[in-house]
Structures are given as structure tokens and as C-alpha cells.
Length: 397
Ligand SMILES: *Cc1c(COP(=O)(O)O)cnc(C)c1O
Image (spheres, rainbow, N blue to C red):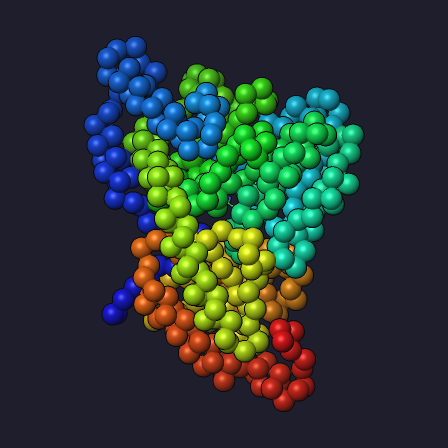
């Protein structure tokens, strides 16, 4: 194969050289941070140094950062904490959006069985909630609003600071799953007025299996895991120090290069959008402007997303049809259905999520490969045949 282009950064990112070096070096920091002796204390210092660096990138205080095994655990812990405090006060209503990550939606499903009621806000055709609809949905019994920063399948951004302000005004806790935002765009927990914010290292060129939760000082937090007194007794288990140190290195790096990275990746993304929009009966999913630099999602009428992915893989391009977590099932993505797309169109979707390492020429190659494959697949598609003959109406004009 001449080249291999990795365009699936929303599923996971390649580890950066800086994070890899930091992780290797940290392997020798073998002490247990809970130990009293010198080796333990050196590990403890390194742990707190990493915590402080991560806090700085998010404009948080060091003691407001808790380490977890990743974004999923952070989402679970934030939601469970707010729900448990809410339940004690008889407040068992939670507001979310229809297209959250499954780490949020499935936690809420579990809470439903425990008697919570959930309001799912519409994300409309542009993939963005309407803050006035949020405000109307808040009731006396509402204990939590959980809305993501940026969507993992289509890349649209939510008006997080406005949501935060509304929640503060109504004295409702606000959790934000910021896994697709942290390390990609500036995130400021003060400006955004969040109470909880989840992040995950492997989405910003850190290692897998490590992440964290920002918890505003004063916001309630309960443990999911019981055991030792790590993380102030709120997350038991000996800390994964090499991964934590590597996560801090990756995030520091991302924060230092943020404006250059955003400029470069946005330009590549715009090139992709322009090129793919030339394909007839295609559409960009979600708002054109209010989106993260790295992720786009397109629908092509008359084709199956899965076949497109197979062909692109053959041509040396790693892409996705949406969430890595739902691939393998034939159900169309809950995200695309939430945008109001009909099933048959939601099936023909392609997510491309890119990183700084790609060059303009590689983007040209992706555009060329997608155009070629879409036209090949349409030529052998009975659905496309029916559309062309006018036996069926186009959904995408
Ligand atoms: C990847 C992702 C998660 C899950 O993070 P893990 O670290 O893989 O558990 C949660 N939310 C969003 C938006 C994600 O993209």
C-alpha cells in the first residue's frame, strides 16, 4: 500500500512522541504514591505535578481534578454523584440531549430503572440544542443537566457557556462530557460555569485507559469504586502513574500548540468539506460553522456507509461511519437519527476526523478516493437506480 491515512481521530488518536517519552520515563517512577518512604513520595510529587498541569490547561484548581480510567468512568461518576444527591432531596429529573455519547445515555438508562425521569432535548437539524428549550425544561425536581461539549460523530459544538449560565441561575448541577473538546479547542471551566467536566487522554494523543473528571469545589462527588484512600477516597485503586504523567504531557503539548493546531486542522477540514460537497446528493451533517476543527460527517444518498468504509480501507484510508461503539451493529447511528435523518440516509454516512500530521495532498487523496468510491457504489446500487429513474424521491437534494 502506497500510503496509509489515519482519519479516525474521534475514535482514538495516535500517541504523541512527547507523551510516549514521558510515559516511558515514568515507568521508572515505580513507587506507590500512597507509600510513606522516599520512592513513594517521589511518585506522589509526580502525580500532583501532573494534576496541576492538567488543571492549568482547563483553568481549574489542582484539587478539582480527579483521575479516572477514561471518559466513560468520568461521565458515570459525575452523573451518579449528582443523581445520588438529587435523589436524597427528592429531585429525580435529569435533562440531556438526544445525541450524547453512550457513556452518558446508558448511565441515564440505568437511572431510569431507579425511578429517574429524563428529558432529551432536541438537537435539531444543525446538531445544536436550543438554550431556551433547555431553560423551559428545567423543573423544581431537576437535579442535573448533562450536555456534551462537542459531538463525537458529527463534531458540532454546544453553547456550553450559555448552558452553564442557565444552570447556575436555576441552581441545577451541570455536567459536560468534553472528551471531544479538551486538547482540541480552548476549554475554560470558569467561563463555562460547569460543575463537572469529563476528559480522556486517548482522544488528545495521550495513552488509552486514562482520563479524568473536573469537579468544581463544592459540587458533590461520590465514589463508584471503594477501596483505598486514593483521590481523597473518591476513586480507589493505585494510580496509573505512567499513564497519568503521559496524559499531562499530551495535554500540555496540545494546549501549547492549540492555536496553530486549530488553524491547521480547520483549514484541512474546510478543504475536505469543499471537496466532498461536490459529490451530488451529499450533505454535511451538523452546522457548518459551530464545530470542532477535527471532525466532519457526510451522508451520501443511495449507498451503504459500511461498504464505503471497506473500500476506503482498501485504498489506505481509515475512516468511520460514526461511533466506533456502534459499528458492528446494523442500526443507524442514534446521533444521525437525532438530527432527523431518515434511516436509509443515516446508513450512508461517513465520519472523517483528522489530525495535525496530515498534509493537504493527503486530504486531496481522501477526496478523490471518496468521490471514486461513492460513484462506483452508486453504479451498482439498486436504490440509486430507482432514484435516478424517479421511482423514488431524493432525500438529499
Ligand atoms: C471517547 C468518548 C467517550 C469515552 O471515553 P473513553 O476514555 O474511551 O472511555 C465519552 N464521550 C465522548 C464524547 C467520547 O468521544
